[in-house]
Image 1: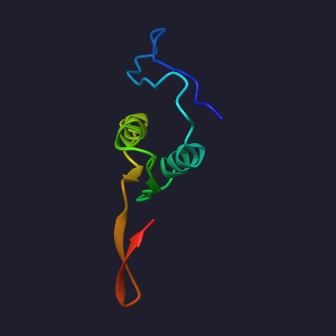
Image 2: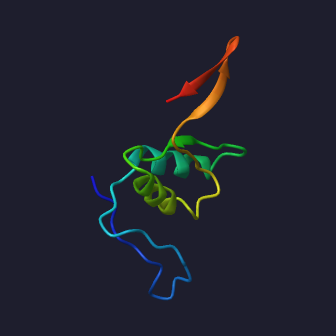
Length: 87
């Protein structure tokens, strides 16, 4: 699935741009849409793990989002009695 190229042209006033043919992070896009409708909702998503450049490109897709928190390369979380690296 590919995300369509878009720009805010046509007098819409939008400044958003997307990479042409960027791989679609469908779940992150859906979570962002839901989070915009809920108060204090911040989806935590894994960025593209294939390379640092791919992760940077993933972050660029969500740079205008005030909701999505991207993780690269991993997060250290406390589960139960100890710290665990995810993913």
